[in-house]
Image (cartoon, rainbow over all chains, first blue to last red; front, top):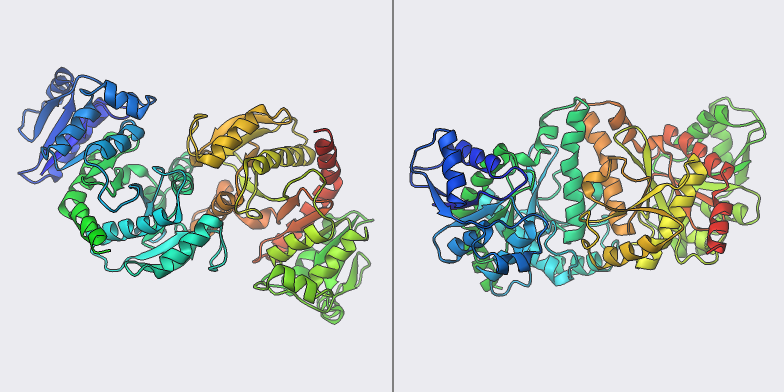
Length: 314
Length: 314
């Protein structure tokens, strides 16, 4: 398996990314290769600094960098030799099985749409986030920010995308799908959630268990949490913030530890013709290590192929 | 001050409500009276059971009860002698300074609109919720569920309503107003939040500090958190759920204790010609006690009068 990693992505790049790659090496198979995308000199120096001289890391030169604040479409067209641009080129050409970056989220999203493109029949891809549950499991929530304004049909598709992803990566059949809403009852909600509820109820491809409320977020009521990217982004970030708040107050236990985003390594973009992972901008070496673990999981479970099959059978 | 309390409202009514009223007595002034609205026999028996024979509790007979699941408008018109119906009658006639209930939220909202009515110039009243902050303070968030679908102009008014409420009850001048959103930058958001941001920026009646993200929810970045009732309801309930999760895991400290909704006693409806408090359906005696404390606060600070003045000067 060839895992392309943007060495220049994230607040602590390139150091944290290289350290994360080195941490990940022990969990790789012998025939796995990390394609470290970034400036050759920088990467060589960092690898030398850590005394690495092995063959599981291949440097793929890319001299430009897309910064965090840059406009995604503009940056991608003006910087074809950026680490994100080159990463997507590798993915499109089949030279990488997966591409991951802790860099500019918008550029990762736009790059996905322009290079490997949306799967035919999918209206809009979503970014999925992992939500720690009180009992130690996790739920998959989508969308968490790619689509701030959604239509009911989009959420209906997110339910299918999430179900296929969850089943493919965990093996759990017929994962429970819940709709984030403001009441358990079918007649509760805003215009979007009311219309979405009606679609989900009739959707035979999913195991819809009904509405979820904010109080159910951590309660393992659903495996897949369906919501628009505005709501999903806010509640995911709110959940993640607990880790630091609790740590600052000297509190920890398994649940608190699981609210640490570093554990999940990133968020897959689902609904495109390729495997792309977006990691947290503040990714530490541990987060990058887990990002690479997540890369292996999406490739091994063939999420992409299974989504295509599910959509074709619609 | 005359505080009307719905004795039949809430999952643990009437027992918990009567116990809560009795707990609240010690914090009342001598000239405060609790108007206990509900079936006379039931209330008399419960007061006798607790050995109460004082004069600060007056029973206002109401033989009907609006159940939690009932349709608000239908229930109010079919049950004029319900505890909620009678409570609003007292409020409208000026026989009560404030009315509070842990019962059917929809009926409390509809009752407000039909009896004391919306303040002239206000597009839609909002329900405000208290959000515990990491540092022990709290923020006021609105709307938390009265308006699942909002327009930018409504959120712009919520910002004014929340600011007046916060300043009137805490004394803090020019409270900081933040807009719940998916990024700090002005150009981030969904259609609603983008348009709202533009209005808030130009609103001279408020101290707008910009967008908040989910990670800022507990961080005391704003005194007033502006959001639509869909988002607000979900994140408020999510925040409240932390209390039980942490308690179940044997964790507690000041912050965790502050996520206990019992502490706040309820949520004021803001933007109507009267003082109305909606308490949590699962209110315990402690929650009812604090609900009564909140009643005193809204009456004493003359929130209603100050909102009218603020709107008239628009």
